[in-house]
Length: 104
Image (cartoon, rainbow, N blue to C red; front, side, top):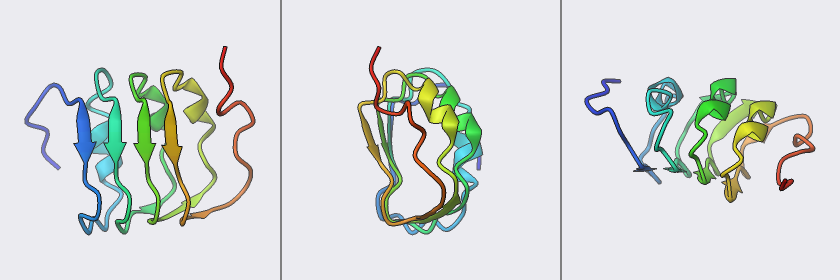
């Protein structure tokens, strides 16, 4: 994917028929400012990369109803601004990181 912008605040690709998880590396170009990601109801596969924990401005993350697999990354614990997390209807295994949802 091509990144033509230096900033992105909101990404909503709900039901966009995405079938590749290459969206994640592209998103990591927006480490500051990106606070809303909606990728629900697509065909994303593979595990969620650990680099997701570097999107420190993220407050909304929806990845529901995809084909994501593996464990939920422990790096999500780094997202102290995260208020909304939606992950159902995927192929995750293992446990939810215990500190997710804890407030300081």
